[in-house]
Amino acid sequence: MSEDGHSLSARVFHTLREEILSGKYQKDEELKEKTIGEELGVSRTPVREALRQLELEGLVTIIPNRGAFVEGISKDDIQDIYEIRSLLEGLCAKKAVTGITDKELEELEENLYLTEFHIQKEHFEQILELDNRFHEILYEASKSKMLKHVLSDFHHYVERVRKVSLSGTKRAKESNEEHKRIVEALKAHDAEKAQQLANQHIMNTIHSYDRYGWDKLLNMNSMEEEIHGKN
Image (cartoon, rainbow, N blue to C red; front, side):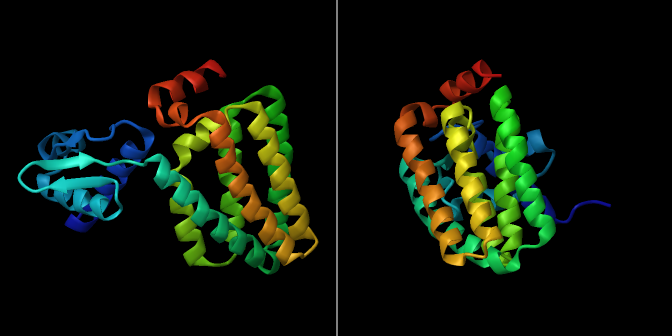
């Protein structure tokens, strides 16, 4: 069965968004409808629609009679995302106190154990995957589909810088200890403490980026060298 126009546009949108966020396309690089259509095996129409949607998200700028150009994610964007995330993650953890199931708590505790193991082994790809999953469980435990949707998007938007930050043992250890304290608050049914700890966890992350160095975090080549050098 062939894809309709809407699903084609959605597929192109998600592909392009992933490629922009991963660094395949650099800031100010032109996104040519014809080239992208040929690469993805679609006509120019769904590409054009996807580019318009990306412009609404602030990832692309469309200049009339010139074309579409990558805007990407800047340092200011990342800082804004983390400030917003800190508030929403705190609310998410607060809601999770009453929404979390025994199974979800068990999975969080297993996540902490596995993360500690992989930190000792310096398996940084696995640490990132486990960090992703920890937050996914919290989002699910909040039982708020709106929080889950917004936070999942924000989490994905900053995956590039998170990948580098968690490729260092120091921040990986700090992050896992912060996760442990959040889980303890959830187990104690302390909603205010869970909210405070989750809020602080996100702010600690952005502070760790200041320590790490923004030039390196925002430079795709430096990031890849850092990650591959540790694996």
